[in-house]
Structures are given as structure tokens and as C-alpha cells.
Length: 346
Ligand code: SAH
Ligand code: SF4
Image 1 (cartoon, rainbow, N blue to C red):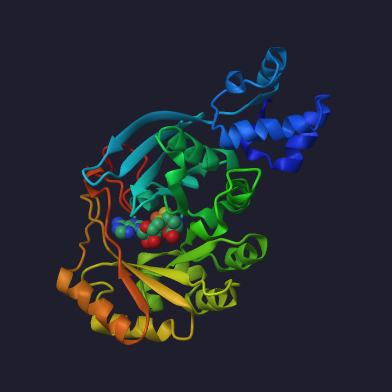
Image 2: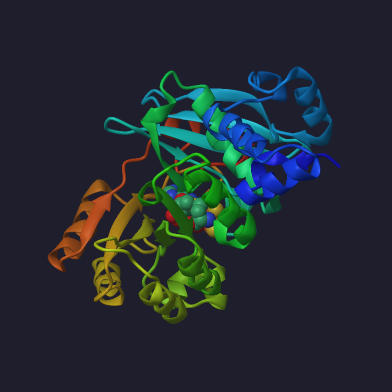
């Protein structure tokens, strides 16, 4: 079995290199090529002797994803389709923002959580991604950019539930943020969860990243209807985990709230939400449901969304209405299916 090098951390790479009878500095060189040089193959590691490159190629691999195609939206958002080596497809979305780019990455092929409004959830779980498959999305998209350094932010908001693939997610975060890895700022990496309370407690101890919680409802009945995971970790438990989550100075937890007409969009829901989050360092992202023919739900009217926001603001919350990007190519939140062209349900 060849070793999957992008999934190893610095120490593990050193051990591997030493086991091959090489000096430790080779580990640093190789990691430089992988995470800063963004290489696809050992042949590209030009400061390694040629016979060493050939030897390494027999012992390890560095490219765990096949790029299948890219679609570009009218607003500049790009959706990348990748194939895992054993067949399943995943999607990654590059989003242009003011002066920089955010990359939305997948942590699983499909998702087992089955949220009613989410196309990834309709797909069920195909499998967990390996750490290298999570990181490789970042590497391949950076390779495609004229100025890769403009990609400053990473969000785990693509396909899958990152905390249901805990170990791989933590490893990926390590290589994304460590200085000898890709060196992204901890402040610019955000992990979004549907609310796996026990893993949230572990996460706070294991790494420093921004936390986003997909709340989507302010009472248990509505939340359990939309998100089956709420039956296991109801709001009380989830909010306790949020309150216990260690937040560095002035940081906040982001609460995502997908707004669905007639389900969770009344004034009363906004008031409940304000009550639920009171005392928490919280910022609220309102996401009008991104529609899809496979979903029998709609987003509320613009007026309804604005009114909902107004109520939250009057209770002193930061509440932002998130603009959907990439709608025309099914690249927006909840529209990733791994089936390019959004073939699900059509
Ligand atoms: N599994 C994680 C991260 C991926 S989902 C989580 O649930 O947080 C990323 C975000 O997309 C979540 O906030 C989810 O609520 C939102 N989402 C899912 N389907 C959507 C849809 N149809 N329209 C708008 N947002 C959606
Ligand atoms: Fe999974 Fe998140 Fe979609 Fe729910 S919203 S099904 S947790 S990807």
C-alpha cells in the first residue's frame, strides 16, 4: 500500500522519511512541495534527486482527487467537480468576495444527516473523505488560480457534516493552518456543523477555528422536523455545547438560519430565536432557502426576510442576510449533490 502523503502531519512525514533511510530535512522539502508548491506529482519536486523521486513514487502518492470539470456562474462563483479514486463525486465552490476568495470545501461524499432542505442530505452518505481528500480540494483550486494567495478563507460548508468525520477533519485543519502546511490563519477557517454536541466539545479542545452552527429553527418541534439530528441532540443540549465552546477574544459563534416560507419565518420564530441566543456571543446568518426542483419548499418573500432580520437587530443581534452566490450553477448552500447539473430529482 502506498502512503497517502497529504494526510500526514510534519512528525509523521519525518518518521516516514527516516524509515526510508533519508535525512529529516527531506520531510520539510516534501511538505514544502505539497502544501506551498501545490504539486501534483513527485516529478514536479525539482530539488529532489531524480532517483529519489522515482523511489518515492513507488512508496507514496500525492494526488487523491481527479478533477472532472469546473462550472462558472454569472457572478464569478466557480464550482469544481472532483472524483474520488474509488468513484464517488464531491463538489467544491470558490466564491469571490470583496478583495479575496473564500473556498467552500466538502468533508464527506454525501451526508447521513438527512436534513429536509438539503440536496446533499437527500443523497445519503457515500463515504467519509480522507484528510488528504479534504486538503486536496484547496490545493487543486489554488493551482487553478492566477493568484492563489487571494484565497484567504476556508469554510467547511460544502458536502457533508465535518464533525461526523471528526478525525479526518481535525487532521485536515492541522495541515491547512500549520506554518509548515498551508499556513491559513485560524481566524479564517470556519467549520459548520448541524449540531453534534459531543464533537463540538472535543473540537473546542483540539483546534482553534471559527464555529458555525446550522440552527434553522428556534423550537424543537420545527427543528426535529427539518433536521433529524435534533432528536438526538435537542436545542437545550446544543445550546449548552455552544455556551461551553471556547471563544477567543471578540470572536462569535455564527448561527445559520435557513429561512423557509411557512415553516420557520414568522415574527414569533424571530422572537424565539432572539430568546434562545440571548447572552451568547452570536451572529446570525439568515439564508433564504435556495430552491431546487427536488425540494417542495420555498424561500420567504423579501419583505418577510427583512422583517425577521429587523426583529433580531432590535434585540441587539448582528443579523446578516446571506446573498446566494452561484445559484445558476447549483453551487449555492445546500445545492451540492455531487451530480453535476443538479440532476437530483429531475
Ligand atoms: N453539514 C454542515 C455543513 C454543510 S451544510 C451543516 O449542516 O452545517 C452548509 C449550510 O448550508 C448549512 O448551514 C445548511 O443549513 C445550509 N443549507 C442546506 N440546504 C440549504 C438550502 N437548500 N438552502 C440554503 N441553505 C441550505
Ligand atoms: Fe448534512 Fe449539513 Fe446538509 Fe444537513 S445541512 S444534510 S448536516 S450537509
